[in-house]
Amino acid sequence: MNAPDRYERFVVPEGTKKVSYERDTKIINAASFTIEREDHTIGNIVRMQLHRDGNVLFAGYKLPHPLQYKIIVRVHTTSQSSPMQAYNLAINDLDKELDHLKAVFEAEVARVSGEY
Amino acid sequence: MDGASYQRFPKVKIRELKDDYVKFELRETDASMANALRRVMIAEVPTIAIDLVEIEVNSSVLNDEFIAHRLGLIPLTSERAMSMRFSRDCDACDGDGQCEFCSVEFHLRAKCINDQTLDVTSKDLYSSDHTVVPVDFSDPGSGFENPEDQRGITIVKLRKGQELRLRAIARKGIGKDHAKWSPAATVTFMYEPEIHINEEMMETLSLEEKTSVVESSPTKVFALNPQTQQVEVVDPEAYTYDDEVLKKVEAMGKPGLIEIYAKEDSFIFTVESTGAVKASQLVINAIDVLKQKLDAVRLLEDTVEADDQFGELGAHMRGG
Image (spheres, rainbow over the protein chains, first blue to last red):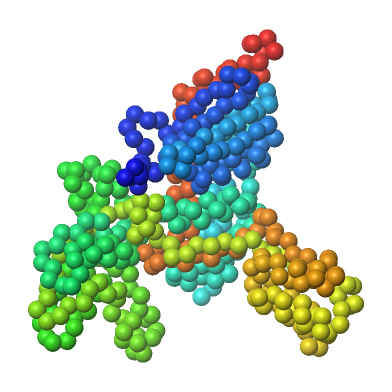
């Protein structure tokens, strides 16, 4: 009766931004990113990549409620960097890693099927 | 800004490659990437499936919505899916989502005329686009042995006089919306195990003790070499991370005899496709979809200006 429609899991409604950003007033160099209509697939991978950054002191994500389809990623950095920089760097690095993975996989498929 | 990159460089080695099955090793990346790929393969790689059914005549024993549900679950060859548009995003059609760019039309006409039961199968579905057809499961090599397998997926069976006539529209969708759009039959990954046998301690065991260690594992991981009387690892990947061997070894009073670790950055993926997309193509599409998702999640340009409160300059401006 109260269940949301299935397409709510991935369709961002009109007027809502996909990613929004909130600085933490009490801690310097800390911010939360609220990403609409995403789940653990993106949350976990961004969080683990943020952990690899030396300037990141804290990185975590949560789903506030399983029926509300959004994630909140919280980042604290040192003063050498900023949460936004860290987040952008993490996304860029993941993008490059996926490019590399795709190239390696395609080369391997070509190699294996070429052997037949 | 500072050119630092914390990128990883994963390695892939394919073990087995068939049309609908691929088994490969993924190394030097971490579990979040492996899990993200698994989740995307199951739920977010787009395929094409029947989504709207208009029934003209149905005098079969199954009711209309039952047949429509079954039609939706039939896998359709979806090579076009990655380049197609979602019906909701299509601006070419007048809003009803049935134009040639965003959908594929099917029709089915079956009537049972003779006394024998007529099997209406997925082979009776005729498509308007020859690249999007119900998946053909028949094995090309064994066509003469098993004529039963060649008939396709049974939709409904008709008695003499019963008729089924319908028109169906297939659209692009993702598994997250409804499982009929999932291109994956199963996608699994396991951590590659690293098994160490302490040879010195193994020398102190009698033959019965060695046999009991080998047999304590529910799967055939170890075997006793008949010539050398040593316990050897026969198939490390048959290990299912049950700790039976470790418990047995401790119960025997010899902990440390066998040590098994899971390598944290080495995964063995098994991908089985429904036939809608080839298994290797499924993995490649999953990587593309994951890249698209990451792109959608980037910060927009206008949020960067608000950032000058952070970092060294911000701290300096605040007098820190």
